[in-house]
Length: 188
Ligand SMILES: Nc1ncnc2c1ncn2[C@@H]1O[C@H](COP(=O)(O)OP(=O)(O)OP(=O)(O)O)[C@@H](O)[C@H]1O
Ligand SMILES: Nc1nc2c(ncn2[C@@H]2O[C@H](COP(=O)(O)O)[C@@H](O)[C@H]2O)c(=O)[nH]1
Image (cartoon, rainbow, N blue to C red; front, top):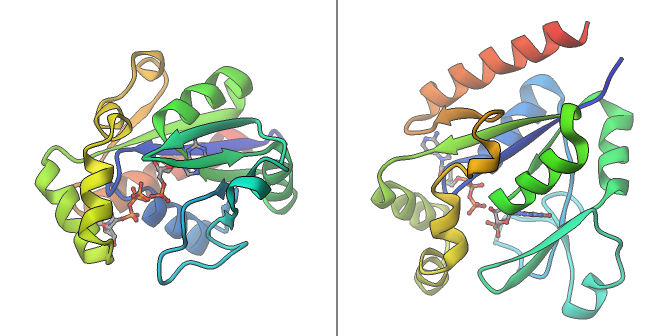
């Protein structure tokens, strides 16, 4: 059976991690754990949500791709992907749009790109407040060039990405269930 990687991308607060958690819980689709120098949020655990690194330890890993997002480093490895594929031929990964483009180029037919879309930026801000992010960190993030860039599906992904409206969870979940069903059919 061929392996597949669902790349979940989109702007901050669109629900990428929520979708990844749902895929894990409902379909046993294993998330690839990536590395970051960002400090953990109150409910995040090292080795589960991320491998939390300092500036020095971040450099000790070999990355398939790495990016800077709102002043912190993020990176993902082939090793993480192989680990996830050992458990399930369908894995998922949460990436900014730059990372999504890199995966689309490097893994071509093995990736499915899902771009989550919320039209009203005020909704995104409210979600981050509700998540418990500090106002300073929300402001810094929403003023970053990465934030603005990730609001729009990049040209390089327009032919291949599935755009998933993410205004409400029931709407998102319905679309996700549909896409997983199609993917499972392709892989039997
Ligand atoms: N479809 C949705 N409808 C309503 N609320 C949602 C939806 N998806 C996520 N949320 C809520 O919005 C907040 C942000 O979601 P999540 O952390 O999954 O976003 P994200 O895209 O992973 O953000 P980031 O890129 O900042 O990590 C969470 O509190 C989550 O419960
Ligand atoms: N290109 C990559 N993007 C990544 C990676 N790990 C996470 N991310 C993306 O970074 C931002 C910020 O994440 P947050 O957890 O601090 O909110 C978000 O868009 C993630 O999707 C990675 O290894 N490579």
